[in-house]
Image 1 (cartoon, rainbow, N blue to C red):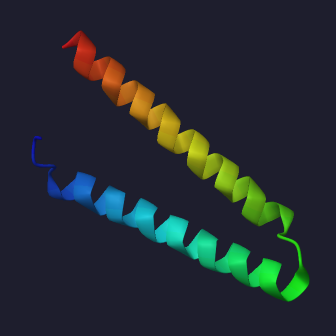
Image 2 (cartoon, one colour; image 1 turned 180 degrees about the vertical axis):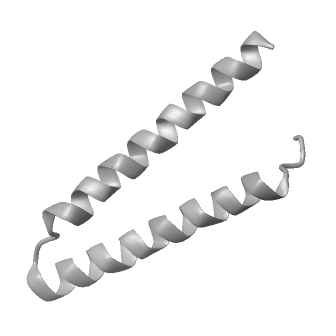
Length: 65
């Protein structure tokens, strides 16, 4: 596997922190209120779509090179 540059590592770390915060906030909301608010769910959807879109984009780009 090719070593990622510092910008890519920073982006991965930032994405991981975002996911961990979403898990914490969603878990707290569910534990205290029994439900998760719409903004948290919408952020999850955006995060998942971003992940799969970037995965598709970079896989397609690597195949075309």
